[in-house]
Image (cartoon, rainbow, N blue to C red; front, side, top):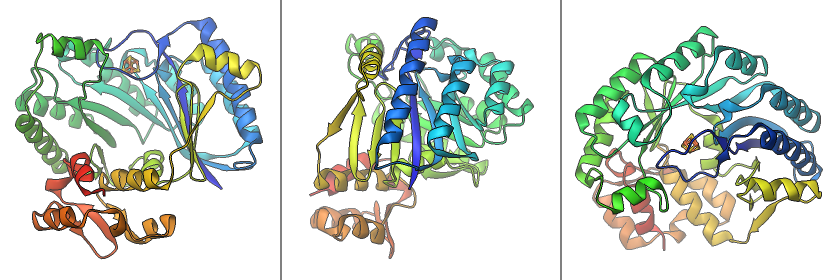
Length: 379
Ligand code: SF4
């Protein structure tokens, strides 16, 4: 069996205004306790008969701010992982990095540990925008991080860029992308800002202190961004994911295509043999549960109907769409049975939905509206 592995490193040194990922303030002692628990979790997970002797085909260390990690603790955990699972030395191995915390030494150590895909959370090159997001880095940190990646010979690396920010114009976004494309990253995640409830940014928007771009401007920004990246040889393979040929993120493709993956660390999700489960989103509970020999998991009881909806939602976000035969093989029914026939016809006629022979996919016009179209399509 093949598995993708996600590890949630739950520590940051600050809180960004838009962030609703699970994280705690970084503390060395807590990090040590976290790694101790992670080692126990890895051993317990490896005992599970469903994944015993599984081959790990991609690793993604996300967070939080994984670039803060203590390399010795990380290396110890990695060798334990390799004792329990088959892990090749050339698999895609990603680590998320915040530009300000990237050092040459740290990256060198990561490279020696076979990490081969750093992803830098650049978000923007505009200093005011970065301040509004409460990011700690500045454009110099971003450029320096990419310089290090190139200097150390990381052929594959990614960057994250956000659009749809308060006060952002199409011109500002084009300038951000110009600067980014100059750095020639093999992979770009181009996200629209979402204002998550309960975040400081949501409060400022609700108070009327700051305003978000309207829908028309958002669409213009997205289209402009896609065009700019495509002029530089990037192809879109998912609504927010753009890559130079051959540099698509294998780990994320596994999520979108319904492959098995194991999630370790607080708040991490897993999907194994059609069973979904999630770890508790609290590092203290996570540690105490594992110290008493118990996996901190909650099983997701949703069934086949939810899985089908999810497969359609994720599949339509990808440029290649959903393979009809793979869907039928997985769920035992043709995809059309799950779709509203009237909406299907309307969307085909309007050119948003393309029913190719093998795949069902969205057009360039449709893909930006993938979530809304899925809601309309599902019966
Ligand atoms: S660094 Fe990442 S995880 Fe940490 S607060 Fe900022 S956005 Fe959230």
